[in-house]
Image (cartoon, rainbow over all chains, first blue to last red; front, side, top):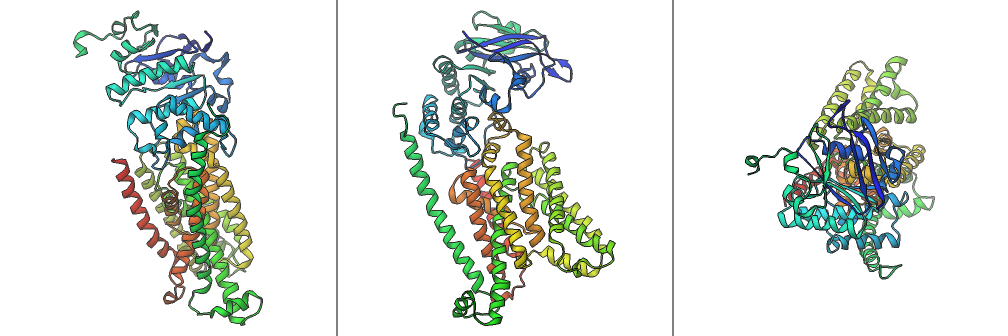
Length: 242
Length: 358
């Protein structure tokens, strides 16, 4: 399958201090990968480097065959979309307005929506199961609903890659499971490449397809949930677990 | 998609938009016309309605003619223009700082503009040895530039600080402190200045819509039109700001350019009006909220024009109250704007708390 994201000898960190040995990894089309690691292990630093907000110390990132730096701001907006833990908090923002903003990289100065834009907005709201909320104030939604609206925004943005920062945080257990299914579905049916971070190790062991595991100072571990011993790598001992 | 061109969604959206937009807009414009007429009719001198027809036909009594055409008409137009400019300027600031209490007068930007004007009015008088206020019509362009420079500098300072001040309240507190500093520097300048200049400056500081002569109206009208159109053209960026910096950037917005442009337009509008009318509080703070509540939207393609027309109405209303016969035109405009604006702001704070705690 097509390689969408390629990480070549990437050293991440601040002020010349590398957090871990160089990373070499690949994300393919239709692949959903979970990024696991304790707080401070470098998940956020990796995300910042992948979005171009932080310069790599060494090595680089290739998106669709071209280096990340070679893309313009609007070019990047068409390559990867974000789903973040922070959410818009304006009182009068409608669900429609937020999802429609996903079309902005594809529109002109007046952000005029064409018929096909409306079609995409409707379709993606249906895919994430929140079309019935289209007229609601975003601020009045539950955490799970907000998360799905932000994912619909990312889909409407129509990018090959989606980065999600802890999409299952703040959700109750059934919503977490539902969201894991949604991520798997988007990868398979919408052909998206998804990299998402999570702390829900048990959930990932059951529902994720592939893991990238990070720990400070160690090389990144890549593998399927059944094949890699995450707990040993992260040095989680029995007595810590409960 | 099953039905390509005009989808179900599209029809629903456009029908909804139309009913929600046209009714309030028509009402606001009608009220605006009514207030404009009342601004011409009401005043300390009672003018018979029949005289208005004569005056606008080109005849009429000489005294009435002067009062209507030289005083009331320019004042009403100035109020209308200032209402538009101040409100749009306030809207840009509230969106840029994602802070419902951001406003030129609260963030110290008016004070920066005042300081700029003080430097021009008070210092040049001191240096040239004659009172500037005695000069034939103090240079409007000079005062505008000074107000703009002052406003712009404070805006840049606030923007630089805002990235470090995460809390809404701390940013406002810093703005108030900046206002104090600018105010005390202004006071020091006053101490060393000539009496006539101080008098001019103090009167200017009260705020008034009646200082703009017929000759300067065109200048005021064109600058405010340009500023408002620019603000409307920024709507896409402003909508993105609302989502938060990281989402905005990920949707292709160049944060630094867009912030700077927003500050320039907002500061420009504010500075032009402050130069002509003095620092006028609360209109820029309250009107964007009235627009949000009336249209129930945060979409700037609707909100920016809505803010402009509501600002026009509110400024005309404030001017009308300030000139009611009993006050003899002596009530400072700022007292009226505060009386109307402050309760609106208090309501906004309570409403926000209610919605957020749900």
